[in-house]
Length: 79
Image (cartoon, rainbow, N blue to C red; front, top):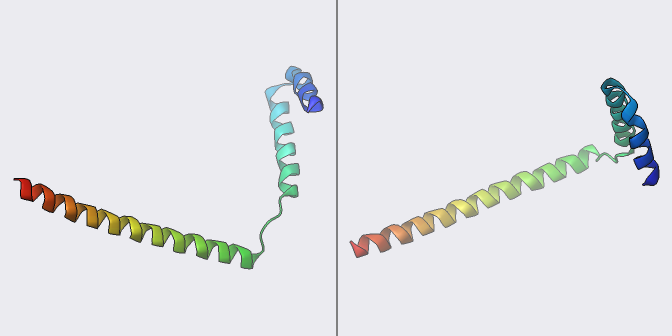
């Protein structure tokens, strides 16, 4: 951690373009460290997410319909 702070302080004298280039090199190095999912893992995860979003939408829609019915009928009885 100390090395990073020292490098950051030392690089303040560089131009903004030099700092951008350093940043992009660091990003490229970090991207190489990423473990990317296989095509099958990606398809499975996408399927699970899409199904979950559909299920959640149905649950919210059902709750909305039920609450709307309850409140509309309850309010109608008072007036």
